[in-house]
Image 1: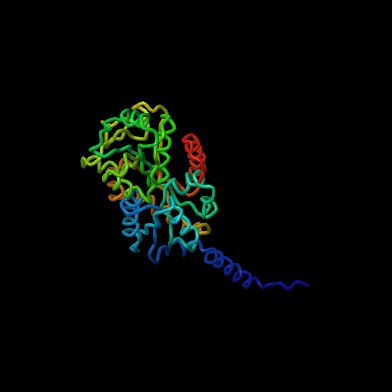
Image 2: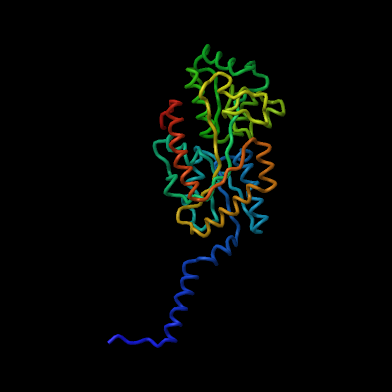
Length: 329
């Protein structure tokens, strides 16, 4: 016969089960206590890049809010693959995060035959963070005064006009220009945009399409000349500069976006806590300063919203890369 449990014992067991659910599932305590040690934001680009500038603004905001240090670790190189792989292999506890762009999570799988990470399976989306455009720039001393000048020279001298790139967005922007204008350009890859800009300033390359955060300050300082912007609308920071579409390359548009990811398996409560911290960080004084100076704008989401956005952007970047005539390496 099945023993009958006295009523008091039933109440005690029910209470024990309730406590087990509240603590064992890690519902409130883990999320409320997070973070209780430093967080590291791993970046796929070098110091001084747009991603670096924005990440440091977000890091300061989270530090101010949590009183825990947020460190920025620049792992530039291999088109962001070094940084993405490092985070994919990190502990899934929310303390090592990838602060990245469409380069690692939408474009790379169309640019390379094999990646050392899976952009979907290896990561837990946290939030989208921002989006922006790029600017096509030449050295201020260049004889190329307009985009029409650049295209005309490229047609006269096939394969001689060089462009640098420090990200997938930058590379695809140059390749798409080549495809839509029927020209042959020489692509020179760099680990990060600031390195390419250094060579552009030094006269080692002829032009590049740089994110506005790093390109606009050089234009305003008189060191570079802007020939066009990659968005379909003019950039308020450079109202006199036409869009590349306006300048004669119809249908031209290349933009970029920022987002944050944790390693796959990171507890949902921790991801939600990070989502709140990062969205709040996009409204901080430091982030507003970044947006105002760079021409980028805030763009946030839920974790599920980022997953859906990433899926749609992966398809979109596939179409752009195919249109640019780029074969996977």
